[in-house]
Length: 164
Image (cartoon, rainbow, N blue to C red; front, top):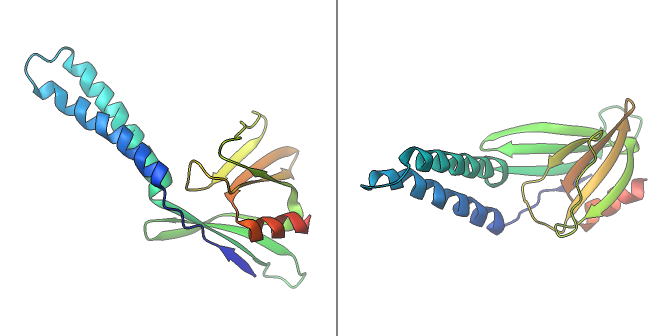
């Protein structure tokens, strides 16, 4: 019925990756110079910065998501939201939820973020850190609150909001 595959440039994520990779290289190579104070501490800081840059690359630069609203396989006419994750050449469905199970749909901008309360379960299926297209879906299932954060353009947001 409708499919949305956000195509962002990920400039901020790339800059953040480079900001963490540069100190990793500097701290890792600094002990090679003579008279370097605390070479083990430099290597430790370099390893920590390298782990941070590897996490940013794996979480934000190498992943992408596709959001699809389509009818369920049976003939009852219900619609499902399916989130498919691409990581390299591998594609897999990470979330499938019926639109009837969604209790609330809210818009969240990158500048007005809020943390989720601890009793809630939160899933984030986005490949950018900062955006104005975040959409938070609230689902109540088995006496628990579940929040799902996705990227949604205006059409996908209106479909999700209008189904409620």
